[in-house]
Image (cartoon, rainbow, N blue to C red; front, top):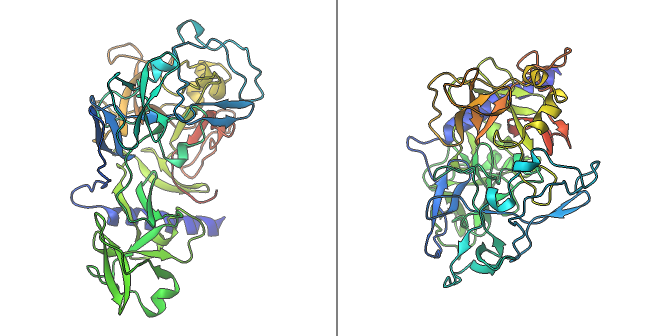
Length: 450
């Protein structure tokens, strides 16, 4: 364990140094392919997800691909919207061990799928444009689809640039209720791709191996040779390759060309243990490549090392957790926001006892007037007795920090099993299906173990 802590301590220092070195005096925004859009649509470069399609009002567009669950599946198939106007009153039994036919919480006020996920409707005169197509809804109306996937907006998104309805970040990709924001293709050469991560939009090869830059290189000039090549493989370009956006090629040696991003030569780290890795960034003077960095957490939060990886800690250094929840109706609505029924969360964190839940998973309190400076982090007033939204002047209301529009928590626990010191992550995977369906997970910025 002493060895593991030593390794992690070195990693978090190098990790933070890499993040700092990747920054710029002015925030960099990701480039994208500017394909034609139908009238009324636009692209917004968002803080965490990068370039995303939005409607005329700036509302992010999402898709809901059908997903196999334990006892069935839910979601859309290509060109066939399934999100309807009927409010479901009973669970579907798609996730064992719960049988279908059980009454859902707050059944009298449970919204329909289209109330939470308004379909992006098309006029009768709308015409297909490129990857954009008009498809028929079961109710006879027309709906826009992109690459065949019917499109929706989210009632959670209140202003342009909000992406609270869903995410492409793998850390959040296990909830059955998840929808995915839709955006344009990244403007990269064919052998590269861009992955959404908690740290930012990470550039990889097409088969997802991370790429890196070296401080010792010059502008479109590689100084990695000899022993340097034992650990680093230059990413070569075909002689016919041409510049693409911020990507260029240069002659590495006679007749051999290498790719450069923003004028910096790029490499693979030969010793990376897995795809989408950050290990090469631990090597002094080497850095992962990002098209744009994710916003930093608000002042007072800090990254720290734990046995599960590098996670976020609060002002006292205690691990910060997010809560996730997806219900079991056919429309698979999210139940992890203060607008949803709180019985799911109260059950998993306190056996249905609200006071016990508050003691086990207290909210992370935000100072009065606190601002994050970005749209990923924010604050919200909460009525702790109900778990619902409150007003600033409501008696007993708490001003809490939010991540992607959802409150965050620490784990005080009870009966001696809460987090006692900053390295603890005792509530990691707390809840149903390792916390994916209804439960808590640490806010992880870098995984050490799969």
